[in-house]
Length: 141
Length: 141
DNA sequence: TGTAAATAGTTAACTAAGTTAAATAATTTT
DNA sequence: AAAATTATTTAACTTAGTTAACTATTTACA
Image (cartoon, rainbow over all chains, first blue to last red; front, side, top):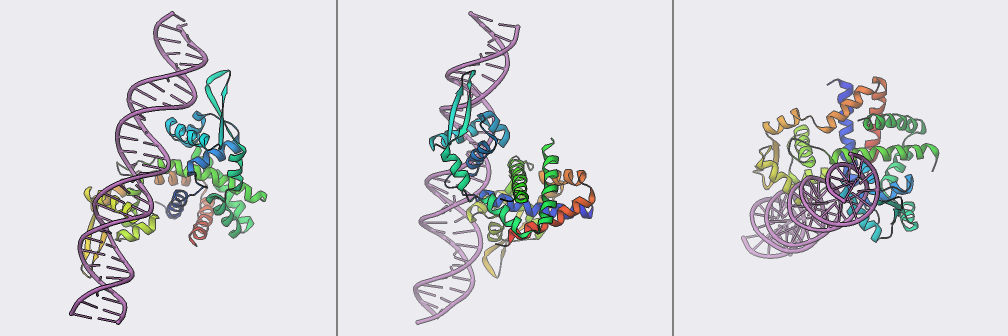
């Protein structure tokens, strides 16, 4: 492996290790990380059905089903059966769910805030720009 | 939130979502992601005991204990009791374990190789430099 | 020197979150 | 109208984490 690539691999390894540890230790006001991410996703992108969520989070339909069941019980989401296709249930964030996201001092917020505060603005812009490219590369396949 | 910071938060969110999905779907020749990471860590950094691994991976001693038990059964690691403190068992990677790491077309390798191939060298260097800074910031606390 | 405290690791019982296979309900196709 | 497809759920299972309680060993100190 070339030197530049080797350096990148090592740095990425450290970073990934951190991201995993950080996500695993996530406490989102009593709901799990995936629960929180579902609510946040629906809040940001608007209503969607279970199938969409399963695809978005790369987990199976039954896994989403259980998460959604709990989120409905907790009144963080509501379900609306579509009259034009009654198999299809649109999930929507309740005001309680929005409060959770808004008020959540969540890990990702605290991490990104910390990074934003430590990097010079120019570097932060540069980093964001390249990271966006990286995400697009990763999404390609 | 300022615009620059908002852009960073959004990009980081996408990225984190990808990293998690990618790690969760990891197949490392029949051993789990944590198993693989333990072997790789010991290979790269040299022998260590269970306690060190628990701290490194931010998981409990019993969790490490179970992983190590399996890795010993699979002959990917060996343990050596230290004569100067017989509570302490140093874990070492076997040649079979080294083969696993060397030969592993693992997810992180394929991801970093893909990124390395798509970014211009200059940008890759820039990205690595800033990512290193970011990791150091994250490690601070 | 003998006992108490600390340390390294394990075992047991539990939980959370993923999986596949099979079931249900609604819709579309032929 | 029957057959196939689609969205979701239920059931049974697996993996990987947790805490509490245990063993074995070492260290501290009256």
